[in-house]
Length: 530
Image 1 (cartoon, helix red, strand yellow):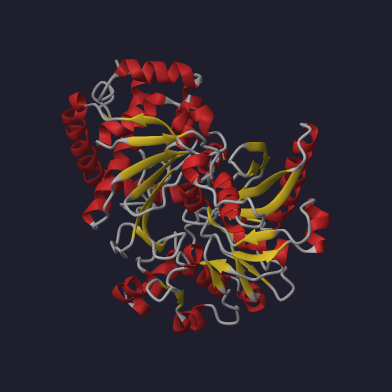
Image 2: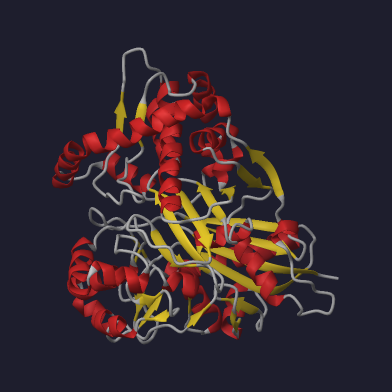
């Protein structure tokens, strides 16, 4: 008898991942497809949206083939999708992309549109309607940029997609966007009414049909005959709406209930605190949750694993060696303080012109000290975000650590020590594709008489708990104070340097470094963590 399975695919910044999961959470097969973003100008990060469907087709066929090669007969009963976001893919009346998709907050091209919208609508009114002030993370100004800078493309635009909703369209023919993703198309979504804010949609997205809204786990269609022929997934298989990858990753570890904080370790760091109340603060992102009745405060560091990867390349050392030397360096890295803003910074300082700073260097410092300082810098960045969330009213009672960076113990321990937080690490850290498969399993539960809705606690139980060490708490309090003062005391000079960097043509080293820093994926996290 074939195993009843769900198939989950996540479209990331530098790779797409797929997983085939049995009804009890057992992973039957996994597959990954690598791709690249384009950076045609400074501050631009974009991608050909057609790649998303091409890779879904590739991954689905590879997953089914792998199961067959293992001698496992499977019946796909549901499909889950997720992807990076918020992204802006505009298409014409025939669903042809009018230009490459503009990616999330790593794309900073829309600064002028952010300022103009803020002036025209009023920052307080934008926050009241959409929950957050406008930043490079917001989708609305990116639409405005296309209207201003590429009017011919904008004139042809008829629909708006993100990676997950594009896959839904190609699989089922449905035009839909989930509420969580929609809430990041600020300021065009009303966070309290949970609907598009029609006056602003008409003003800034004229001619584009507002996508109907659904929740991440809602079934929004079934696989068409044409999609079945392309993917190997049977026609008529239910497909859920899906949502943005970080939120789907929170689902994969059960960190989406009131009081939960998901902490995602990867090339960048991402945090999502979940509650029932809409909390507004100018330095974080307020969004609708993945499920009805939930709200989020979210934040992200622009670098984390990207920073340690840069140091690895710079020193030509392997990760085990660097980690051993960092452990020997000890708390405080021999008197160093580092700011991890090597690609600017997202929350809570919202400063794209921030830059990396290392203070306290002497000729006696080693590469182990530098690597330790980098790990501590990301940990202090997490603390800065958590304290900002709590100051805004977030009730954080449980922290779940996810991502490939959780495979190593030193980084986890430093974060717990620096923040004072207990972290739970789940058994499976495969990520958003696993969460998408779980959402599809929940949505299709009951399709057979013996089906029971699955529990993520059964699918993915806690495997490890990391506790902060009381004996180093005072040391990290001192380091955190120095970390905050280092940014304020160097900000003016660093902004001058950032302006000078923008005025110079980027060389090959800068291009590669930008690609690493802008990479939201977690494809190499296990390597980074070791």
